[in-house]
Length: 485
Image 1 (tube, rainbow, N blue to C red):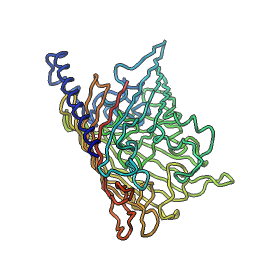
Image 2 (tube, one colour):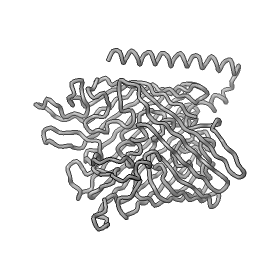
Image 3 (cartoon, rainbow, N blue to C red):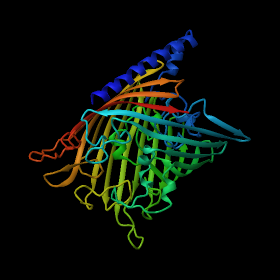
Image 4 (tube, rainbow, N blue to C red):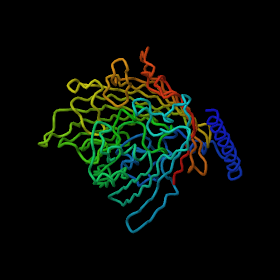
């Protein structure tokens, strides 16, 4: 453990040296910078919500009026990226221009090194539930996150996006497309055509009927939530439990967006469900988003999905069931440097649900309605042109056991629901003209503690150095590096 902490300290010192070098370089390049210029460049609103996102991947019609909103399925190229300089590719994207259209290529690579102060024998952060962490799963080793390449073609009336992802986080984020002979999540996959689907993170095309109305068809990232699969789009490197265990990741279907004004837009759609390359029944889900910007600097998103994820029986009939999520998120730009973000969601399910994104409740009761919810607060502050800091607080409650984040109770010999409080402190360092992002991060997760008296193996969420589940909390510390192009 001492060696790992020492290595992380060396990495931190290296980052500090890089920051100082970057500052000196900027001083040489720009003898004097006005306060206005600094304000324009500083990271705000989830590290800065006020930068037009149209130059990141191909523009959308709605984006021009809603670029300041942090997450809007109609205001972004379905990668659901916020308007922030941390987004994938700004001015230096590769472009191939032809008559009437433009092809853009962008992407990123991310990696990390984290240590866990519990020193778990498993050398991971996953806990007894197997989903105690989203993407930064490994500890005490250099780990690759995701390699992403996005091809975007646009012209005046249309847009096509092919978002390909590779690496461990691509598989975790696209888990519904992973072929396996084992029902690892309570479902079974075995179709040969799922192998190639694994690398497709998004693939859709869009038609702009008018400047206000558009239709999108294909596989696209979810509109629900405040955080993202894509590392450059989040201020914090590790994703929270509300994202990882509370909401869908992606949908396949048809949606339409209409911009009423620069303050109001609406998206409605019909989808197969979520997190699955093939539908498991004939039922279709309804999705929606109402986007509001009532005053300058304040963004509000109301999101919704209602679907039946029960697997069809041997006659192709869909059993009774329901999966619903209500979601509210947004942010307020307090000043040029300080931004407050918020996210609350509530989910419910009923029935024998069988798609990859759903779980049989921990107590096996598929008749009763099971619920879960999450509440999150995000505070970010720009210290200057290069360094920003942020604090995230979260409470996620799955005490009904509807979702995968659970404890194992040795007393009853079964999995049971749980709840968790999580706190994350992250520094965001921007180097190489913003292409390279270094994110030192300290995180603590505290789960509901169980009475495991008399059970040596433990009934807590996290593993200790002896391979026993005796820890109801864990603290991790490390550095993530992200290069976007």
